Image 1 (cartoon, rainbow, N blue to C red):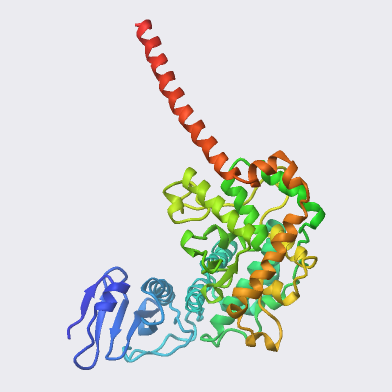
Image 2 (tube, one colour; image 1 turned 30 degrees about the horizontal axis):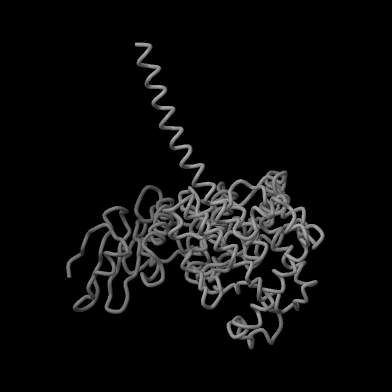
Length: 463
């Protein structure tokens, strides 16, 4: 079959037929030197370019990038651009002075030719990102790594990793600079990302030093933020939460406390994720990706919270509420940010997860049950023998109910005497609130129409 030429993309690759015999080549019309080798059993992304020395062509280099079943066209194109750029500088992409079958009989570059640079941080990151996607890492995790590489290490993207491997002092100095500019936690986090990318790159680039350069840094001390509340603090927090204007945000914070769910996952909770028959809320993509999907058992108070959120959502954001439990006027259609002013609400986000774990002890919840309710990994050799969903329907739901009851019991008589709480959590409060909002909305429409008529009359008199 003759060579084909078109812009290579994933859909076009799927439609390519196998060769009748041998193999054939599909050249990309967008990036010169980037092509696809189609064989009977696999299709391989490949690049080809001319190594030059002293202004003359020394050799033609052909390098396979990867199988189409293992990487996307977008990722392969990014690696191809990097490899072709290295070849244009007289450097072999694989860090080896060898010539493929496509090479001419010309001699290799002389010893005085530019030294081989090897894989750059940019190319190593692209390959590591593919690895993360294969392991079903969550979008938030991939985005966090991307931010570290492309923002924190932006000036190093085109630097060969071998330079960092041979000069670990440069990495230590960078860690000090990030600590000064961005803080100790971001400095440590970005270095963990760099360490992971370097280790992954070394699997296929053995010229990199075995000692990871990140090992040269002095890690910043990190302390767990102990910001959870005890039972005595709950009354004040509920009073703060009761006066928040947006009822959807109010229910979001309450459900975070009752479930200990991570806010990032809870923001993306859908109405379809609720199973009232089984009394669970499914979390398909928690921290750690889809492989750690789990169900949250629902207490009576949690079900009431979700119902209030859905009813308010249908009133305030009727279109978005068809899909999301906590809808909002945002690009995604759901709450995009859970942060509140500390003057308005003293505890939110991870503070409430810590509060749940703190209150689990006086509620009589064991360490193992608390870990499973919070979707934490269970330590020990026996962890693999625990079947979580078998405990979910009965035991874990009872434990969840015990935590919710302990939280609401801590409010004491406040929940029946404080007007703010009665207006929020009292019997029929949601229905009255919605009816009041609908009356206000209708009144504004009438007033708006009347004001418009008065304004038109006044303008007519001026004429």
